[in-house]
Length: 147
Ligand SMILES: Nc1nc2c(ncn2[C@@H]2O[C@H](COP(=O)(O)OP(=O)(O)OP(=O)(O)O)[C@@H](O)[C@H]2O)c(=O)[nH]1
Ligand SMILES: [Mg+2]
Image (cartoon, rainbow, N blue to C red):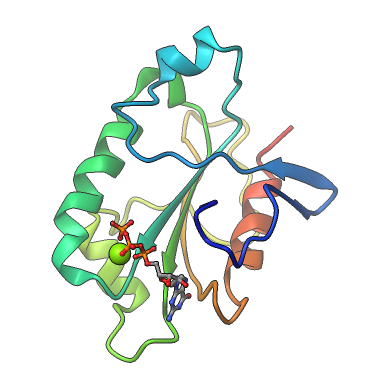
């Protein structure tokens, strides 16, 4: 997320949590083993998808699937942000869910108690970083699952 100048610093705060945002170009380059080697603990994954760039949904799905199947991230909440919804013809939330293979796979917005289940929190929120809208709800949702 950091290449976006609209996020003008690497920290953001929601619901008394301070998030350090680390950009990930490709998980294959910055994988879980690397993270552990360097002493990073991954508390959550924020996966930003360009909802307007429909030609690259298959590529996005492949990268997301790699993250979702990484054992080191098995219990980590996933926030999927569908960005650029200010652009006409950007994918709708349902369309994005479909193309990322997330239909019937997300765990629910609002407060959902998953503590006693083995289910990893995962949800899709649509946003426009340029318009500064949408991602706040996503980060708030994610906050409830971070200790
Ligand atoms: N309209 C619009 N533009 C955005 C938004 N967020 C970021 N951008 C712009 O998108 C441009 C970057 O596009 P990206 O798709 O993130 O990056 P890219 O250069 O295409 O490279 P890839 O990561 O390969 O897609 C920058 O000019 C940003 O200002 C948004 O919410 N709406
Ligand atoms: Mg792009």
